[in-house]
Image 1 (cartoon, rainbow, N blue to C red):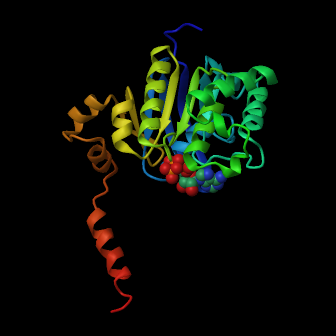
Image 2 (tube, protein in one colour):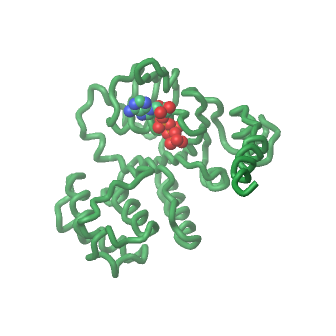
Image 3 (cartoon, protein in one colour):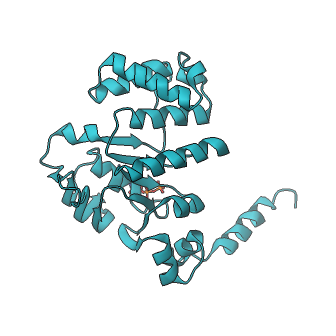
Length: 263
Ligand SMILES: Nc1ncnc2c1ncn2[C@@H]1O[C@H](COP(=O)(O)OP(=O)(O)OP(=O)(O)O)[C@@H](O)[C@H]1O
């Protein structure tokens, strides 16, 4: 595949669950090396889009090409070049980190020895080597997140889908992960970064896509979005483009109900 070709190409993507339209015509071309900040209100359709690209959701209309192949017609091989950190980590709690990562590596076609060697090395770098033979059920939130990051990168994928990848990580680990993502993108890896933490998205993304009601409401670099909206932060741009201005009113109503006790 030519480097200039998009690594992800989506045309008129639509999806509905029953009568509810969740994606209302998404058109998107993503090129190698881009870090896409994929943002939008709860329920906007972000996870649905990502799950369609991962081949986990069927029943959509429109075309989704990944690595130049239509995923509706291609076999599952393209998934070997994809890594995924879901929002809710479905780790197998009864396994040790070593067992889990060895298992995931083998799902991606690696042999067990390679998967174990590489995951141990990555765990050492992220500071969780000492717990490597302990059951994941005993891990802290941050340790679990590190296991997820390792599992998504173990097989050296070309596209990485990350859903709130920094959740539970301490400030130092956050900085390491940000550097890792920047290095990967400079090597031409593509990163699809979904998060509700606007100041991180603002800093990390080369391109920001805002989804609202199943449509792309904004698409551009942070500087471009700033210029268009005349707002200075992504948080304010988000608020402006989603037309939400009831923050104070909702907070006041909420606190009023809380205060009813003891009146
Ligand atoms: N399997 C399903 N069956 C029915 N409705 C669904 C299903 N999955 C998602 N939805 C609905 O589709 C809409 C979009 O959901 P989606 O998870 O894609 O949103 P999101 O942008 O990722 O939201 P969040 O920021 O809360 O993670 C929501 O209204 C959700 O309730």
